[in-house]
Image (cartoon, rainbow, N blue to C red; front, side, top):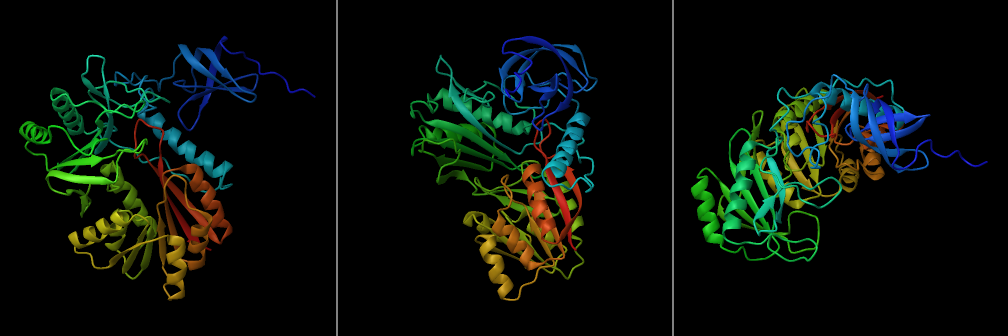
Length: 458
């Protein structure tokens, strides 16, 4: 029997009531049970919507006019919010953002992990959910008159939206980007063109220490030579004498990866410093360091609480990066072993341990799924395993290695609720009980959410 046709047609304008949000923050409304996904629609609202795409089981619409408005709708403070792809949620109240993120985690726990009984706490938010990012990596383009411009890409495109300020960046980042752009423009340095693979200046990256106020500027070019290098250094330093480090990164590849392999210190220090809690970190141009230290402190405090360390425990920290979580754990544990696949990160982690005079943290380069079975054969038995994987989650071999080591507790830090729920299901089936999940809002105004999860060995 032929399946019924969708009840709407492309280019049709309809009235739609929104009843839910997708995990990206799009409004969801239904026409005779057929879901339409509409950016900027909010639950409880009615709106005129133009249907722009019709598929077999769902469609997409464009918001034309809101006829009944939600109390949670707010005016986005950013001038380019509706063009830029950097943020997704500025049109909704901050409380609604936090509720949406909690619901997203709950939905994934239920649908993917079949763990609807596990408590998911309200999302831990920020007192001031603006100006929190300590790192900006911004592409450079060129206007018709030859002037350089900087801005984030338009949604689902590589067109740069020209902007002078970004309200989720540290204000100092904005000022540094504007300064480098102005100086490069003045000296006639061309922007890199993705289409032709010509030009010079690809990205401007700025890192700031939130608590130290250290500043590092990274100028990314396609060419090995940075034109007018000495003049640029002098003029940046004249404009901002407190800059600690000016770096040149060469990326000659046809790629959308931002940093290339070659990095040269043009002036100043190789590292800047920042602190999270009582721990100081050295940050290099390529270091993975959390972009929101205020919320990172809350995230790590939660991980520490779930690890429940009393001073005698052995802990393994998988995907340890530059040692941020490891050193937090080392404050309370007897011994911490950090594992990371990126050699430069392990070098930085060892330096950070020395910087903080922590002798009970050791760091190793390698695949956790290979190192952990070897350690187990050597008689190493961790009391706690902490894992903080990339968005794709843990692969099967790693989950198996964790289960084989039989720690009392696992603390799973995740930046992707769907892969978290999938992995929790495997750990549950392997003999662990998921006790609770705490979402933390690391990226206000965007649809991303981080979680810390506590598991106990049954």
